[in-house]
Image 1: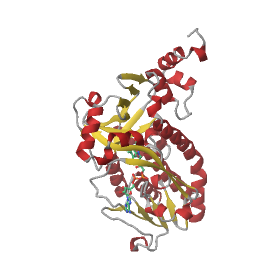
Image 2: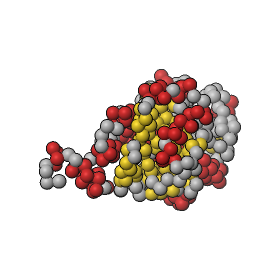
Image 3: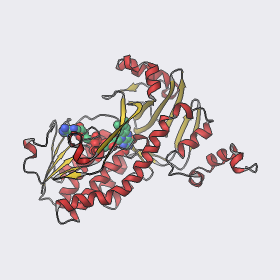
Length: 383
Ligand SMILES: Cc1cc2nc3c(=O)[nH]c(=O)nc-3n(C[C@H](O)[C@H](O)[C@H](O)COP(=O)(O)OP(=O)(O)OC[C@H]3O[C@@H](n4cnc5c(N)ncnc54)[C@H](O)[C@@H]3O)c2cc1C
């Protein structure tokens, strides 16, 4: 099969590798508009069971990536100056460039051709001529999807919060969400180390806070200085670092139809999942596994595309529903900050509806007990 993949992110690269592993005779080329040695962003985090999802289908990939990951067992919610550590929440992280570099090497070792600095901007591009399968794996702002919205039944809901993806040389010892009230509103930093020397430091604010703080009129340095001031206590003098960082709003994207003809979507091009649930990269790689298996198990391309959507939609939808609830929680942070630190942390833990009180109790009995104690109206005076 002649397979042409637009976008060399986790989805496109991993799919390329799986197809080539399945059948070395496949002719697989990935077009990546960026260079080999640079990418946007810093580290990405995987929640809960980290890379376990890879084990059943690709033990080698699991073994390749796992030693590169930073891991820690706990989460810390910082409510102004009060840290609330929460046990029982395992996370793992890796630098985005580190992950991509390993995926490049892995795919190339299997015979995949990766064309860097190659931007493909139309399905009529000569590089795609004669392809049996064209994969749109070109990220959240995919033109493959945008230019065919009617066929895919695309819906894009641009969420109002603003975020900017920074890094810092301060190395944090747990995944932390720090919320600080300022005269302009609440600032939230999602921060965690992703290598022995670096941490992600993603800043998120509501649109109202963003406007009041005057970010629209600030240049890059002023923006960094402002965020450094807000989080001075947390950064402990370490600088905030930029990597093509700019304020963005999150596009919540879904598609009713995942393919047409010989064109199929995967990864963020197919759907986006808010970074606050730490699942976008995993979903992208799971899409790759799902499409590879669906094609393997089908008698024709059309059947394979249909099977891909049919099998993948239910598990994906569960995570998307959680992501949607999580987005909405962050959009209410200016109101939620009025809660006590314990109630705030509890609200965070239960925000997606997937963790109920018994699950909080299982993960962190101390937090559950503290919350019960502050809610005698629910639990009675015996607590
Ligand atoms: C601020 C932020 C923080 C995040 N944090 C996390 C996290 O902690 N954990 C997590 O799991 N996920 C996180 N994500 C999400 C994660 O980055 C994505 O879900 C994941 O990268 C999706 O992979 P992908 O391959 O679909 O797309 P991308 O990683 O976006 O890759 C798409 C690739 O396509 C290339 N491309 C685009 N257009 C073209 C073109 N015309 N021609 C050729 N190439 C093209 C791009 O250069 C890019 O390399 C975060 C996302 C953001 C924005």
